[in-house]
Image (cartoon, rainbow, N blue to C red):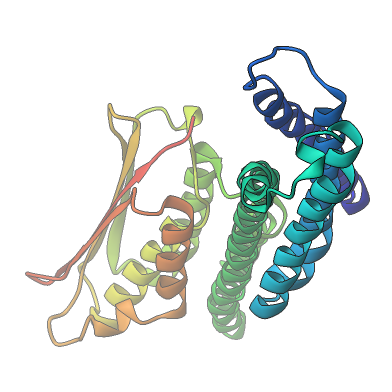
Length: 338
C-alpha cells in the first residue's frame, strides 16, 4: 500500500471515528435533560461546540501542541472557549430563549455547561492522535530492527567469504586437488547466504545442510589432525530458526583448535530438538591451555551474533560459554518456529 493510500485510509477512519464520538457526546448531552426530545437549541449549540472543537483539534493542536509552544496554545484555547461562550450567550440563547435565558448573562453556568462538552471533543481527538502516534512509533521501531538485522547480516557474509577465500588461495598455491571441491562448497554456501537468507527465519533443515557444508569446508584444513562429529537429534524439517547463527560458533571452534593444536583435534556439534519445541545447540572443541580464549568473544562474527540473537529472540534465548579443562563449550538454547 502506498503512502497516499495509507493516509487516505487513515483520514477515512478518523472521519468515521469523529462521527461516532460526536454522536456519543451529543447523545449524552441531549438526553441528560428532563425532557427526552432533541430541541433546536441543543442542535445549534452542539454545532457551535463542533466548530470550535474542529478549530482547536485541526488548527491549534497541530501547530502549537506538537511544537510545544505552550503560551500560544493556552492563549488560543482560552480564546476559542471565550468565542464559544460568546456565541451561545450572545446569539443562540437570545434567539431560542428571548424572554428568560436570553435576557440574562449567566457566564458561570455557561462555562460549566460548555467546558465539559468541548473538552470531551478535544480529548477524544488527542486520544486518536496518541493511538496513531504509538502505532507509527512501533512501525518505525520494527523497520529499524529489520534494517539493523540486514546490516549485521551483510557484515557476516564478507567475514565468512574472506576466511574461505584465504583457504582457496592457500590450496591453489600448493596445487591441491581439493581446490575444486572447496570452490564448489563455497559457491553453495554463498548461494544460500546471498539468495536464500532473506528472512528472519529459515527452515532448520536447510540451516543444518549448510552447516554440514561449512563443516566439510573447514575439515579440509585439519589435514587429518583430528575428527569432527555432527549429530542432529529430532525432525529438523518441521521447524524454522534464525539463519547463520551456528556457523559463527563452529567457525570459532575450528579456528581455535586448529591454531593451538598440532593433532588430536576434537570438535563435537549437536543440534537437539527438545520436547518443548526448542533447539539446544552444543559446540565443543578442545584447545591448548597455552592459548587464550579471550579473542573468541571479541570477533566480528560473535559480536554480530549477540546482536542478532537479541534483536530476533529478545530474552527468549539462553547462551552459555565455558572454557574449562581445555575444552571450549558453547550451549545455545533457542525457541523454534513451526
